[in-house]
Length: 295
Image 1 (cartoon, one colour):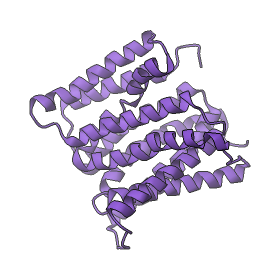
Image 2: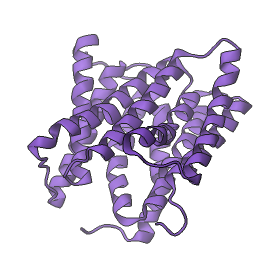
Image 3: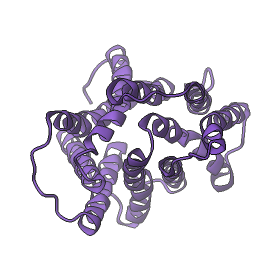
Image 4: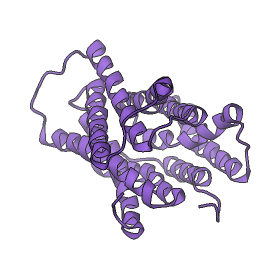
Protein backbone atom coordinates (compact mmCIF):
# COMPACT_ATOMS: atom_id res chain seq x y z
CA UNK A 1 0.00 0.00 0.00
CA UNK A 2 1.55 3.28 -1.08
CA UNK A 3 1.42 6.30 1.18
CA UNK A 4 3.51 8.79 3.09
CA UNK A 5 6.80 7.77 4.69
CA UNK A 6 6.90 7.41 8.50
CA UNK A 7 8.53 10.84 8.72
CA UNK A 8 5.72 12.50 6.81
CA UNK A 9 3.10 10.40 8.58
CA UNK A 10 4.41 11.82 11.86
CA UNK A 11 3.29 15.27 10.68
CA UNK A 12 -0.26 13.95 10.43
CA UNK A 13 -0.44 13.24 14.19
CA UNK A 14 -0.82 16.87 15.30
CA UNK A 15 -3.09 17.49 12.31
CA UNK A 16 -5.40 14.76 13.59
CA UNK A 17 -5.40 16.31 17.03
CA UNK A 18 -6.39 19.66 15.52
CA UNK A 19 -9.12 18.20 13.32
CA UNK A 20 -10.76 16.20 16.11
CA UNK A 21 -10.12 18.89 18.72
CA UNK A 22 -11.70 21.75 16.77
CA UNK A 23 -14.57 19.44 15.90
CA UNK A 24 -15.94 20.10 19.40
CA UNK A 25 -16.70 23.80 18.85
CA UNK A 26 -17.66 23.06 15.23
CA UNK A 27 -20.37 20.66 16.40
CA UNK A 28 -21.62 23.13 19.00
CA UNK A 29 -21.86 25.89 16.40
CA UNK A 30 -23.63 23.56 13.96
CA UNK A 31 -26.18 22.63 16.63
CA UNK A 32 -27.37 26.22 16.85
CA UNK A 33 -29.22 25.75 13.53
CA UNK A 34 -29.22 21.98 12.88
CA UNK A 35 -31.07 19.40 14.96
CA UNK A 36 -28.79 16.88 16.73
CA UNK A 37 -30.12 13.68 15.13
CA UNK A 38 -29.89 15.26 11.67
CA UNK A 39 -26.35 16.49 12.28
CA UNK A 40 -25.11 13.10 13.42
CA UNK A 41 -26.91 11.22 10.63
CA UNK A 42 -25.26 13.42 8.01
CA UNK A 43 -21.80 13.36 9.56
CA UNK A 44 -21.50 9.63 10.20
CA UNK A 45 -23.11 8.62 6.91
CA UNK A 46 -20.84 10.84 4.84
CA UNK A 47 -17.71 9.70 6.73
CA UNK A 48 -18.71 6.07 6.26
CA UNK A 49 -19.19 6.53 2.53
CA UNK A 50 -15.78 8.19 2.27
CA UNK A 51 -14.14 5.20 3.98
CA UNK A 52 -16.02 2.83 1.67
CA UNK A 53 -14.64 4.78 -1.29
CA UNK A 54 -11.11 4.64 0.15
CA UNK A 55 -11.42 0.88 0.74
CA UNK A 56 -12.59 0.27 -2.81
CA UNK A 57 -9.82 2.45 -4.23
CA UNK A 58 -7.21 0.52 -2.26
CA UNK A 59 -8.66 -2.87 -3.08
CA UNK A 60 -9.62 -3.56 0.54
CA UNK A 61 -12.46 -6.04 0.83
CA UNK A 62 -15.67 -4.78 2.42
CA UNK A 63 -16.84 -8.30 3.19
CA UNK A 64 -17.62 -9.30 6.77
CA UNK A 65 -18.27 -12.94 7.78
CA UNK A 66 -22.02 -13.50 8.09
CA UNK A 67 -21.67 -14.94 11.58
CA UNK A 68 -19.89 -11.77 12.81
CA UNK A 69 -22.37 -9.12 11.72
CA UNK A 70 -24.03 -9.06 15.15
CA UNK A 71 -20.77 -8.23 16.93
CA UNK A 72 -20.03 -5.57 14.30
CA UNK A 73 -23.45 -3.98 14.83
CA UNK A 74 -23.18 -4.07 18.64
CA UNK A 75 -19.76 -2.42 18.62
CA UNK A 76 -20.90 0.12 16.04
CA UNK A 77 -24.00 1.09 18.00
CA UNK A 78 -22.02 1.49 21.23
CA UNK A 79 -18.78 3.13 20.12
CA UNK A 80 -20.07 5.12 17.13
CA UNK A 81 -23.84 5.68 17.16
CA UNK A 82 -24.59 6.07 20.88
CA UNK A 83 -21.29 7.88 21.47
CA UNK A 84 -21.91 10.55 18.83
CA UNK A 85 -25.61 11.05 19.54
CA UNK A 86 -25.09 11.34 23.30
CA UNK A 87 -22.35 13.92 22.75
CA UNK A 88 -24.57 16.03 20.52
CA UNK A 89 -27.18 16.30 23.26
CA UNK A 90 -24.46 16.75 25.89
CA UNK A 91 -23.14 19.80 24.08
CA UNK A 92 -26.61 21.29 24.00
CA UNK A 93 -26.91 20.99 27.78
CA UNK A 94 -23.40 21.74 29.08
CA UNK A 95 -20.32 23.82 28.19
CA UNK A 96 -18.39 22.25 25.33
CA UNK A 97 -15.06 22.56 27.15
CA UNK A 98 -16.21 20.50 30.14
CA UNK A 99 -17.98 18.02 27.88
CA UNK A 100 -14.76 17.45 25.94
CA UNK A 101 -12.75 16.85 29.11
CA UNK A 102 -15.24 14.41 30.63
CA UNK A 103 -15.63 12.51 27.37
CA UNK A 104 -11.90 11.89 27.21
CA UNK A 105 -12.18 9.70 30.30
CA UNK A 106 -12.98 6.95 27.77
CA UNK A 107 -9.71 5.02 28.32
CA UNK A 108 -10.30 5.08 32.09
CA UNK A 109 -13.69 3.37 31.80
CA UNK A 110 -12.30 0.92 29.26
CA UNK A 111 -9.54 -0.02 31.72
CA UNK A 112 -12.03 -0.55 34.54
CA UNK A 113 -14.30 -2.70 32.35
CA UNK A 114 -11.41 -4.71 30.92
CA UNK A 115 -10.63 -6.17 34.34
CA UNK A 116 -13.89 -8.12 34.93
CA UNK A 117 -14.79 -8.72 31.26
CA UNK A 118 -11.43 -9.41 29.63
CA UNK A 119 -9.43 -10.37 32.69
CA UNK A 120 -6.78 -7.72 32.00
CA UNK A 121 -4.77 -7.06 35.18
CA UNK A 122 -4.22 -3.67 36.80
CA UNK A 123 -0.51 -3.07 36.32
CA UNK A 124 1.33 -0.02 37.63
CA UNK A 125 0.60 2.12 34.58
CA UNK A 126 -3.11 1.34 34.63
CA UNK A 127 -3.35 2.01 38.36
CA UNK A 128 -1.53 5.31 37.88
CA UNK A 129 -3.89 6.24 35.07
CA UNK A 130 -6.94 5.35 37.14
CA UNK A 131 -5.70 7.42 40.06
CA UNK A 132 -5.03 10.44 37.87
CA UNK A 133 -8.38 10.00 36.15
CA UNK A 134 -10.31 9.88 39.41
CA UNK A 135 -8.49 13.01 40.57
CA UNK A 136 -9.39 14.73 37.30
CA UNK A 137 -13.05 13.79 37.65
CA UNK A 138 -13.10 15.13 41.20
CA UNK A 139 -11.55 18.42 40.04
CA UNK A 140 -14.22 18.78 37.38
CA UNK A 141 -17.27 17.47 39.16
CA UNK A 142 -16.89 18.18 42.86
CA UNK A 143 -17.06 22.01 42.63
CA UNK A 144 -20.18 21.73 40.43
CA UNK A 145 -21.86 19.22 42.75
CA UNK A 146 -21.10 21.29 45.85
CA UNK A 147 -22.46 24.36 44.06
CA UNK A 148 -25.63 22.51 43.09
CA UNK A 149 -25.14 23.15 39.39
CA UNK A 150 -24.01 19.88 37.80
CA UNK A 151 -25.51 20.06 34.26
CA UNK A 152 -27.35 17.04 32.88
CA UNK A 153 -25.18 17.41 29.78
CA UNK A 154 -22.16 16.26 31.76
CA UNK A 155 -24.04 13.10 32.74
CA UNK A 156 -24.62 12.51 29.02
CA UNK A 157 -20.92 13.08 28.36
CA UNK A 158 -20.00 10.44 30.94
CA UNK A 159 -22.55 8.06 29.40
CA UNK A 160 -20.96 8.70 25.99
CA UNK A 161 -17.52 7.87 27.37
CA UNK A 162 -18.91 4.70 28.96
CA UNK A 163 -20.62 3.74 25.70
CA UNK A 164 -17.35 4.11 23.80
CA UNK A 165 -15.56 2.03 26.41
CA UNK A 166 -18.19 -0.72 26.18
CA UNK A 167 -17.85 -0.72 22.40
CA UNK A 168 -14.08 -1.04 22.72
CA UNK A 169 -14.41 -3.93 25.15
CA UNK A 170 -16.94 -5.63 22.87
CA UNK A 171 -14.54 -5.28 19.94
CA UNK A 172 -11.71 -6.85 21.94
CA UNK A 173 -13.89 -9.61 23.36
CA UNK A 174 -15.55 -10.46 20.04
CA UNK A 175 -13.27 -9.20 17.25
CA UNK A 176 -14.45 -9.01 13.66
CA UNK A 177 -12.37 -10.87 11.08
CA UNK A 178 -12.09 -7.99 8.63
CA UNK A 179 -9.62 -5.17 7.89
CA UNK A 180 -9.75 -2.22 10.29
CA UNK A 181 -10.74 0.10 7.45
CA UNK A 182 -13.68 -2.15 6.60
CA UNK A 183 -14.82 -2.35 10.22
CA UNK A 184 -14.64 1.44 10.63
CA UNK A 185 -16.53 2.07 7.40
CA UNK A 186 -19.38 -0.27 8.34
CA UNK A 187 -19.54 1.02 11.91
CA UNK A 188 -19.85 4.61 10.70
CA UNK A 189 -22.60 3.60 8.28
CA UNK A 190 -24.35 1.73 11.11
CA UNK A 191 -24.05 4.88 13.22
CA UNK A 192 -25.47 6.96 10.39
CA UNK A 193 -28.38 4.53 10.01
CA UNK A 194 -29.18 4.63 13.74
CA UNK A 195 -29.01 8.43 13.77
CA UNK A 196 -31.13 8.54 10.61
CA UNK A 197 -33.84 6.45 12.27
CA UNK A 198 -33.70 8.75 15.29
CA UNK A 199 -33.99 11.74 12.98
CA UNK A 200 -37.13 10.37 11.31
CA UNK A 201 -38.72 9.42 14.65
CA UNK A 202 -37.90 12.55 16.67
CA UNK A 203 -37.27 15.28 14.09
CA UNK A 204 -38.82 14.19 10.83
CA UNK A 205 -37.32 14.76 7.41
CA UNK A 206 -35.00 17.77 7.45
CA UNK A 207 -36.35 20.84 5.70
CA UNK A 208 -33.77 22.46 3.41
CA UNK A 209 -32.87 25.92 4.64
CA UNK A 210 -30.16 28.50 4.16
CA UNK A 211 -27.58 28.25 6.94
CA UNK A 212 -25.71 31.25 8.27
CA UNK A 213 -22.11 31.51 7.01
CA UNK A 214 -20.72 30.61 10.46
CA UNK A 215 -22.84 27.46 10.76
CA UNK A 216 -22.21 26.47 7.13
CA UNK A 217 -18.45 26.71 7.71
CA UNK A 218 -18.69 24.72 10.96
CA UNK A 219 -20.83 22.04 9.32
CA UNK A 220 -18.43 21.71 6.39
CA UNK A 221 -15.49 21.34 8.76
CA UNK A 222 -17.35 18.78 10.87
CA UNK A 223 -18.39 16.53 7.97
CA UNK A 224 -15.46 16.92 5.57
CA UNK A 225 -12.59 17.67 7.95
CA UNK A 226 -13.31 16.10 11.32
CA UNK A 227 -15.24 13.09 10.04
CA UNK A 228 -14.22 12.01 6.53
CA UNK A 229 -10.67 13.41 6.30
CA UNK A 230 -9.74 12.69 9.92
CA UNK A 231 -10.84 9.06 9.78
CA UNK A 232 -8.92 8.58 6.55
CA UNK A 233 -5.79 10.17 8.04
CA UNK A 234 -6.17 8.07 11.19
CA UNK A 235 -5.79 4.85 9.21
CA UNK A 236 -2.78 6.26 7.37
CA UNK A 237 -1.16 7.12 10.71
CA UNK A 238 -1.99 3.76 12.29
CA UNK A 239 -0.53 1.94 9.27
CA UNK A 240 2.71 3.96 9.26
CA UNK A 241 3.53 4.68 12.91
CA UNK A 242 3.77 2.78 16.21
CA UNK A 243 0.56 2.72 18.24
CA UNK A 244 2.03 4.86 21.00
CA UNK A 245 2.95 7.70 18.66
CA UNK A 246 -0.39 7.46 16.87
CA UNK A 247 -2.13 7.76 20.25
CA UNK A 248 -0.50 11.14 20.84
CA UNK A 249 -2.91 12.60 18.30
CA UNK A 250 -5.91 11.50 20.33
CA UNK A 251 -4.34 12.86 23.52
CA UNK A 252 -4.30 16.32 21.94
CA UNK A 253 -8.04 16.27 21.34
CA UNK A 254 -9.42 17.47 24.70
CA UNK A 255 -6.80 20.20 25.00
CA UNK A 256 -7.53 21.48 21.49
CA UNK A 257 -11.26 21.12 22.16
CA UNK A 258 -11.04 23.29 25.26
CA UNK A 259 -8.86 25.84 23.47
CA UNK A 260 -11.28 25.92 20.55
CA UNK A 261 -14.19 26.44 22.93
CA UNK A 262 -12.39 29.42 24.42
CA UNK A 263 -11.51 30.95 21.04
CA UNK A 264 -14.68 30.18 19.07
CA UNK A 265 -17.41 29.90 21.69
CA UNK A 266 -16.18 32.40 24.27
CA UNK A 267 -16.21 29.86 27.09
CA UNK A 268 -14.09 30.53 30.17
CA UNK A 269 -13.02 27.33 31.92
CA UNK A 270 -12.33 27.65 35.65
CA UNK A 271 -8.94 26.84 37.22
CA UNK A 272 -10.34 23.48 38.40
CA UNK A 273 -11.41 22.77 34.80
CA UNK A 274 -7.86 23.32 33.57
CA UNK A 275 -6.47 21.15 36.38
CA UNK A 276 -9.01 18.45 35.56
CA UNK A 277 -8.00 18.64 31.89
CA UNK A 278 -4.32 18.17 32.76
CA UNK A 279 -5.08 15.21 35.03
CA UNK A 280 -7.36 13.51 32.50
CA UNK A 281 -4.76 13.86 29.72
CA UNK A 282 -2.10 12.49 32.06
CA UNK A 283 -4.39 9.60 32.98
CA UNK A 284 -5.07 8.75 29.35
CA UNK A 285 -1.37 8.97 28.57
CA UNK A 286 -0.54 6.52 31.34
CA UNK A 287 -3.14 4.08 30.02
CA UNK A 288 -2.88 4.52 26.24
CA UNK A 289 0.83 4.94 25.65
CA UNK A 290 2.75 1.65 25.72
CA UNK A 291 5.52 1.12 28.21
CA UNK A 292 9.04 1.98 27.05
CA UNK A 293 10.42 -0.68 24.77
CA UNK A 294 7.04 -2.18 23.93
CA UNK A 295 6.32 -0.15 20.77
